[in-house]
Length: 142
Image (cartoon, rainbow, N blue to C red):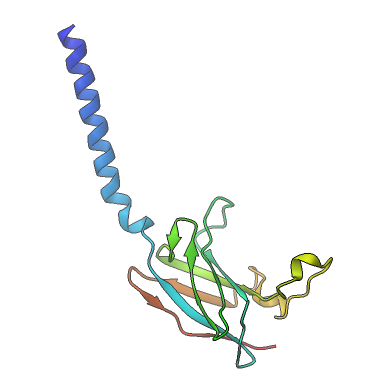
């Protein structure tokens, strides 16, 4: 009986230790850091465009993709499914720009050349660092 109680206690202590230690190793790798930038098309703010950051280290379907919406001034901030910002790393940046009522049309037309929304082109890239990130503006052309 005493042996069983000691074994249960040791298992609980071991489990607690694993939980504590796992928190130390994963914190910086999964932390979100603020990311802001701007998108301009032909030197005009791409107000309403959607910006998607695709991690370079893989394209798994379960991997979160931080996104942002471009405001009337051309600025955006990224939001991750877990909160504001993005996990540090290298990203391919995709940008698409549809009218607000695009969901109501059969074949919505992107206002930008498709190359900016095509991941295989990898025209735009960004690095998110372990700090507040202010990116250089993305200046898109035809």
